Length: 88
Image 1 (tube, rainbow, N blue to C red):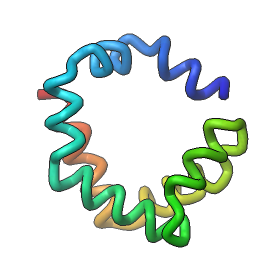
Image 2: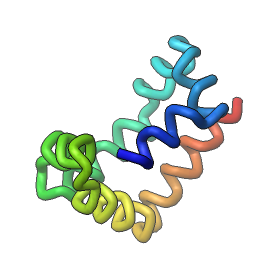
Image 3: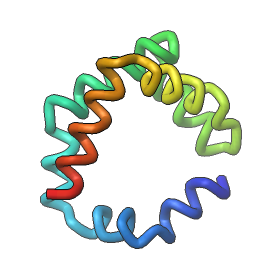
Image 4: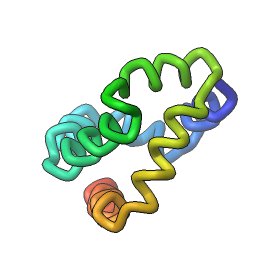
């Protein structure tokens, strides 16, 4: 949970969380949808369960899925596009 607490105190994350329009744009972006599809595949189709485990302190399955995503050239490219959206 410490990682989630740190995220909540991050200035950039706090700014994003306070900007509902930007959050909605990010959520609806094709890149985001593709990333979630890839994460579902990397968690064996159970991304929600991996997220619930992470919220309870066992982030290993979710971290593993994210690492696999970052190793995938398409996933890394999508993450870069997502970062660009965040910086607009």
